[in-house]
Length: 372
Image (cartoon, rainbow, N blue to C red):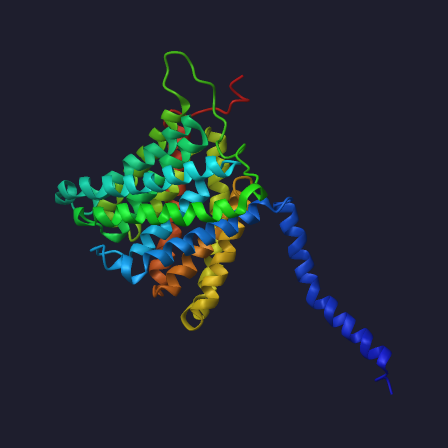
């Protein structure tokens, strides 16, 4: 007989070690990506900010008082989420100030879109998309004002993008303002609670470009111009061949442009790698999204925590986590069309490629090191 207590105990320990081995490997990976756990805390904070803002926006007393064609919770949650991603200060007071500015910058972008889109409707779908070109320019140009400037430019573009996707009109201005207030509350409260446990990594957020030359526009101006021209080409392509998800291409083009052509090449390569990994994993989870949406939302929250941890150094991991999040949350919200989801993937790659071409051929910038 080999069923002695000693052999049973050994088998139990082996089984426990087999179960804990992947957990230990994941823990070691987390320590390499985020040695001090600071970004994990930020990841938890941005997920919490989204949850608080989205929940407040769906409260019946608030939602009923805001006549709007869009979900107030969705708008407020998105404002709060991306404000939390862009914010990068070390103290509660500075972070709260920046979060407020960032939330209202997103509202400004949405308001600009609804006010400008109506006269551009006569140009068809390409008309409102032209407004996104202005946001693409600001994403690059406002980086000249540091981390906060970069965040404000990004938030203005995100506000325009949300307004475009939700088909907001001039009648939704009141809802946009209320969403900004809710988003401010939803994003500031978690930051006040996280306190000094966060140490934002801002050194690598802005790619180093060449120094400013006297009498010549700043490198950030050319970055904005590169993103805007790439976005404009996508708008023209959409008008000519009717792209399925042109805004995904515009967004990819906007965010891959870095402070130098070399930096843009690296960002494009990492975005492609991340997208090619994250999208198939997300598509594989579609059956789960249909039958267990709560599990999928939990997986999306974990992916956003990984996204916050990976930025800015591991852009490939961040893009993969974000691509996975987008696919599974769309599926959990009822979008199960494989052709549409695939179109969003390949048009993201198209946008990245156009952003790379713009950075290489339209006023190309050299890195600071090479310009010396």
